[in-house]
Amino acid sequence: MHVLFVAPAFPNNQMTFVQALHSVGARVTGIGEVPQHALPRDLKSCLYGYEQVRSVVHEPSLFDAVRRVQKREWVDRLEATVEAHVLAAAKVREACSIPGTSVRTTFLCRDKPAMKEALRQGGVACAASIGTSSADEVRAFASQVGYPVIIKPRDAAGASGTFRADNAVELEQAMQAAGVAQGFSVAVEEFIEGHEGFYDTLCIDGQVAHEFASHYFPNVLEAMRERWISPQIVTTNRLDEPSYREVALMARKVNKLLGIGTTATHMEWFFGPKGLKFSEIGCRPPGVGAWDLYCAAHEMDLYRDWANTIVHGKVKQHRSRKYAAGMIALRPECDGVITGYEGVEKMRHQLKDLLIDDYFPAPGTRTQPVGAGYMANAWVRLRHENYDTLRELLSRIGEQVKVRARPV
Image 1 (cartoon, rainbow, N blue to C red):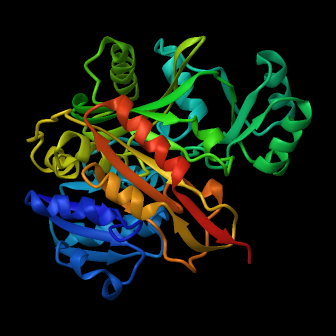
Image 2: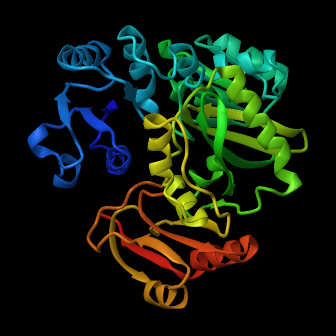
């Protein structure tokens, strides 16, 4: 099978998908922005061919690259695993008559208001929402549903560009920051109180082949705003318990309504006083290294089974569910330059049998802002057979390991 893969060199973990495709027998042609001579050696060894484009989200450039390859030989699949790339890939895929996730499905997985409207019509419980570029419509929506409300880009991923408004003054500030006055269309949503988590699947022709449930501690919006928080992401090994049945059924219903075929999905949800509520979904793997946690927790290579679904139409591995696995993000005490760490060696010695991996940028490294994400600065990943014990250990790391920095 000949697979075209979008952006094989960036972000860094993209190479893992290429290596997985190569390992199950695919011929992989990469389409990327990096010159071929600058590709890492390990990546080059897994590529059958390569096409450079000025931008992987510039549809004419991507289309021309695909057509160049098709003139030379048959293409079976065109795959993209980054949120920002999936819609351009879907449009080119359809234009070039290549099987895969449709433009309709991809659009609904990108455009938050359209996504929620389609799911509400199908009976999925969602927060009230609208999509608009009108400040008056935003104000009217807030007046109707009450505060707090959330304003974010229609195609946002995670908490990127997301604002919470607790009153009319903050609403005006959020609209200004989101560019409503400049004519930008935004998603405006009712704020849902409750715990936030995500449910990820790997599907074959719409049927769930692998599934995983994970939790945020605390919720993402809070975690991405407060420096003092060392946020955690934890995937459970208790998926067979009845408490997960409702979210598993929701995931299947959402996948069906949106036309999910053979692809990975990443579905976020809330559970609180109003019950289980759908948040959003992407037709691609999750970010923040979640699949690495799944691999460690279930003693499997999920990347390889993702490749198996594309190349062979089936999965070949069993999920052990032996471990829960989690990561904790460790923030520098201030923005500036990292000067050192406290508690790292003690942590590594005490938890060496449970440690998946960790990352501590070298002293002298510029810090990244809190909003840059869970893996922007230092982080630690662990696994343990007991979910509750894992949570306690991650919290202990957050209390005892310190990232020292100085302003510049």
